[in-house]
Image 1 (cartoon, rainbow, N blue to C red):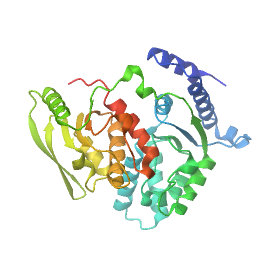
Image 2 (cartoon, rainbow, N blue to C red):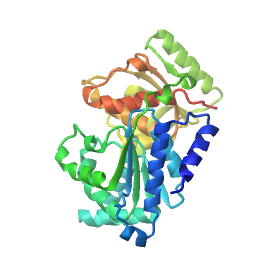
Image 3 (cartoon, helix red, strand yellow):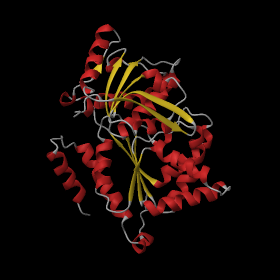
Length: 352
């Protein structure tokens, strides 16, 4: 078998001054095998003793390089492809169902997947997680049809397949999806001790704490600097009848209080529309999280996923240092990803 991916990945790491990690090379080899078996002709697949797995599910802790590796693979995939935030993908599906005249669930799914097939032979979901009961109930049928249409799925996640939606409502309705994913996917765990996003080369630059008068002075000064000579305007966003106002809008630079974004009934669909208007975001007054404000924490996790997916840099003020953040019990695992992404998003170079 060719070692094309491995050689190119090593060169890619060297060009970006990244450490070539042996565990990451193992993943590249798995991806090369996955790519090879899925690009065989129908004749060779038919007579192959090895079952063709149409999914590649890469999981592991935060900051180990999962996204970097699958981005590399995705960029080298030459056929029709689609990269989607999972929440965005499911919103597309629900919109399709809403607009469809077809009343039969299975027919709607079939039509949606046929339409998907015309756009992509591979779909990439980065940081896959399921928190919505409506999505959990439909995913089994949806992904079964996707795989039947020979659409490939590549996924990164912090959680192995069997533990997805672990504490979710009516989880028994999610089990068919788990079985389909386990049957159809190469599942591999990437283990690395260090979180690359917290390395000495990526120190926090725009994370201000604690919440006091001095921090407030610093963030106000910072905001005045980046919005100097920029015109303030009011932006109104309407999502299915829900109006949201962006009042501190300065030609793509925006400022919000945490409660504006996470203490009202907003979800992924709203955040996607808000972020469309932003190139840099400031979020003030991020609190500590516990079981009492877990709903706000879940919204914050979703918001950070959208911001990260759309590659928007941040400045924030918060109650404590990032290393000291607390969490509600049920959100501890996905929140580790949020903390890691906050490190990165508040460190990225921003050019006005």
